[in-house]
Image (tube, rainbow, N blue to C red; front, side, top):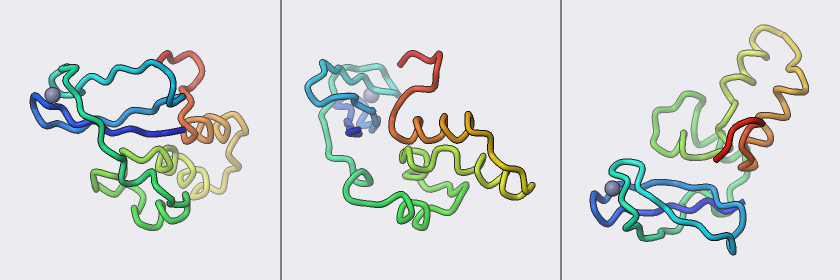
Length: 111
Ligand SMILES: [Zn+2]
């Protein structure tokens, strides 16, 4: 699941996108100003890091910009809340987190 970052040529804002397939038609638009004048950048975090390494580099709830841009941080708060209360996480929750991390939209949400 490639993750692309685009820099807006209008406002210089950076937006990240999951792209299901490299060959799929894809038009990036700026999160900030809606411009379609975007230039692709290589994503810094998507390259060669394991989930564990990403988690280690970004403590849960970290306010670092990369924390929320990295899909591998999705659901960590949920995981830790279940663990803290000693409750087993239901399979459905586990599956939604795993599929969100792999870039799939949760059921019922159209990207
Ligand atoms: Zn923009």
